[in-house]
Length: 217
Image (cartoon, rainbow, N blue to C red):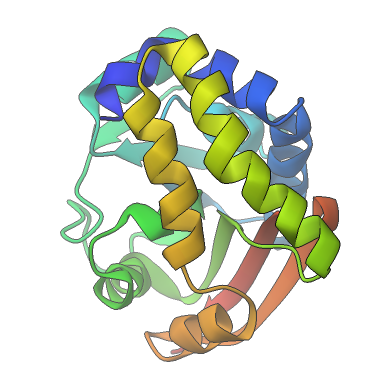
């Protein structure tokens, strides 16, 4: 499914988010920059937009883009991402304690087993490593939540189908956001699978949330 929309994925993201995706990635890269890691793996990197933002924010750091879709990684490579690796998030091809930081933007909910995925992320991080998860979420304000759900389930599939010719991908997007844990529930999930000091930061009225945590030992 992801490979089939790779060529028009960036255009769809920019238009369907009204350009907010650029702001979200800039904020994520800014947070990572405060940690000043030497090595970073951007998991579920897709076409590499967050990877490129990380490379720009941390020009002296080694950043690896990892994704299971070779079609997505081909687009990332064409856009100038320096290092790409084909990888299954549940069986990462990296040694223990390989990276100081791991980022995953809009990818954790796509992993079949969220707990196992988080434990695998913890495995490849150093003892003082940092995790950043950026995910779609549902706004807390009831009116905004209702409007957002209308957009997710009625309008987004139509617009997404027009842009990519793959309506099923955007039906899946709305359903996966509804089913994915958020807020305190996701903080508990993160802390229960190899991390500590997890905190959440809401963006754009709560339609996106950034979660950060440190590896637990």
